[in-house]
Structures are given as structure tokens and as C-alpha cells.
Image (cartoon, rainbow, N blue to C red; front, side):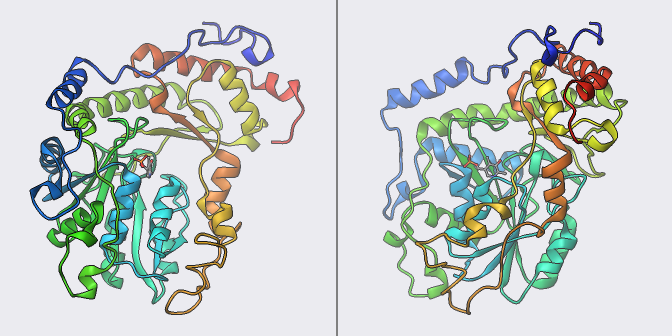
Length: 435
Ligand SMILES: *Cc1c(COP(=O)(O)O)cnc(C)c1O
């Protein structure tokens, strides 16, 4: 391909002229797995009352054993989404209304709303400019006597600095949770992502590396936590006979149970995880090689000790150097047919819910009215300068789930980038625009 062909955004032929779609994720094994559940006729094996069925049906329990062995943990607790898993995890560690939990603004909203779910108060630490993960130094500055836990997120597919966070949490007596929805199969100093916190977990939502529709799994080595997770998942209040307020806390009427069909599909999917991660790593290596020499474009940094699962291939553009705005670059790349482009990421601390501190009704609870006094935690611009800067200016992501990872797909994406970069002057003159 001649990189000097007219840019598609200016009326030329797109570099990628076919629609790019994800590789098929399901095959006959998934069909057979679901079919066998339907033939058995019991689509959920749970009962919300004491007895064996309290812990779910045969496929759910088999899937949990499979996950525990796959991730090398004592306990795996299957749930109907990782959002539910996060709610279980925050509840299990015994969060009280008004307790502060520090997390990152660069994550899916569920990480933070799980804290609010138990009337805890999310506190947002800034992120690391290279990895987009929570910055332990920022966490340390935010610890107060009300802080009870930290939720790290392995955003885009590589682990946060779990050694530093573990040391920090141990020093201050905090629980450490880990949201690894985007990083199943990644390693951190040889250990699987998700296993480096008190409680970790993964999503099996359609958009994740392996999926069963909706679903998730929580992993932990802590026996007591595992029991509490199982209780919160399934109407604990109807089962528990304790009189101890600590043991009774947060055991409140939920149904987060995974169905047998989803568990059956997830069981078939899990063994495919390693292969899918390897495909993404090969695709990322080819993208690195094809894009590294383009000026004003930085390819993802993988920190020593980490392997990356590449949920998103995260680039940064230096728009001042290029003299072209990120929005214009995105338009040009999209016109060339590049799939999965994302031009910014979440800044949860700027969501209206947080800025106005309105969650339960309109009275400001839990920031107001929680035991322990009103909270001084506020949200808004300026709180997380690195996250805000990346969001506003330089971050440019490629959602790796939006295309297949065959060498040909990746080669075409590289060509599209190179074509746009070869003709940046066209973008500069076509529409005069501030960088
Ligand atoms: C997908 C995702 C979730 C939520 O998982 P669901 O299974 O969709 O509920 C939470 N956190 C992160 C970082 C995610 O990417």
C-alpha cells in the first residue's frame, strides 16, 4: 500500500476496506455445554436456604473448582457479574457506612459504586502516567483514620504495583482488593493477576477475554472471606444464625447467583484464556514493532515483572509535537477503518454522582449522615491531574476485543496508522485547528 494515497477522511480509499470483527469466541463445545444443561432441565441449582444447594448447582460448583485450580487459590466464588463480585468483596471485608475506600478514577464505574453500595465513601487516587494504574504514592497521601481498604484495578490488562500497595496496606492495616476484569491471564512477578490481594476477581461479560454472557468469579485464599462472599451472594440473612454483629454485618438479601448455563459455558471458555492472551500479546508485539518509530506516538509500557493481557492497547499522542488534535487524529484513523479506537477514558471523580455527592435519595448520604460524622471528601477537576491530563489530551486506546488478532488484521491496522502519520500535514492544513 502506498502510504501517500489520499487520506480517507479527505475522500481517498480507506487503508482497511473490510469490516474488522472479533474472532468467533464460541464453538460446538459451548453449544454442547448449554445443550446438556437444558436437557437436564435445571438451569439454576441454587436455593436461598440452608443445605447443600445454598452453594449452587453442579456446574457452578465445578466451575468454581476449575477456577480455584486455574488461578491457584483456595477459593473461587462464582457470581452473575463481576459488578456483583465487587459488591460481595466490599461487603465481605466489613465496610461500615462512612468508611473510606481508596480506588482509581480510571476504571469502570462498578469499582467505585461497589463501595457506595455499602455506604462506604470512594476516594480517588491519581494514576501512573505510564500504566494508567493507581499510583501508590497518591494512595498514601489520601489515607486517613477512616480509610479501611484500597481497591486496585489492573486497568487495560497489566497489574497495578501490587507490591507497593500490599506494603502500604499492611503498614496501615488496610484490606487490599483487586479488580482484574481486564487482566485475566496477566502475571505480576510470576503470580496470576487477581491473586495478589485479599480478594480479587474477574468478569465473564461478553466484552472480556473469555465470556459466558454475564458472569464473574471472585478469588481469595481467606477462608472466612470466602464464606462471607458465599453468604452475600445468596440471601445470607435467611441462613445465618449468628448473634455476632461483626459476622452478621452486610449479609443482606442479595441474589448474585450464576446460572448453570453460564457456568457451563464459562467452564468451556476458561481453558481458552491462555491462548487468547497469547494471541493478544503477539498482536501487541506486532503493533509495537509497526508503530514504534512514528513520531509523537508512544506504544504501551509494560513494567518489569508484568505480563500484559491487552484488554486495551493504550497509546499516547503528543499533539503539540504533531500539530494535530487528538480528535482529528481519531477521525482520520477511524476513516481509514481502524477498529476499536477510544479517545479518552473514565474519570470517575468527575461524574455528576460524585461531584454532587448524591447517591441514596437526595440528602447526601453517605457523605452526610453516616456515623462518624460528615465526610470532607469532595470530587471535581484538579483532584487527579495525571488522569485528567491523559483523558483530556494524550490517551488513545485500541480496544483489542474489537478485531481478530491474526497477523493480517494487525498488519492492516499498522498500515492505516502509518498512512495517517505519513500525511499529518494534510490534517494540519485541511482544518486549521489548535493542537
Ligand atoms: C467489565 C468491568 C467490570 C464489571 O464487570 P461486569 O462483569 O461487566 O459486571 C468492573 N471493572 C472493570 C475494570 C471492568 O472492566
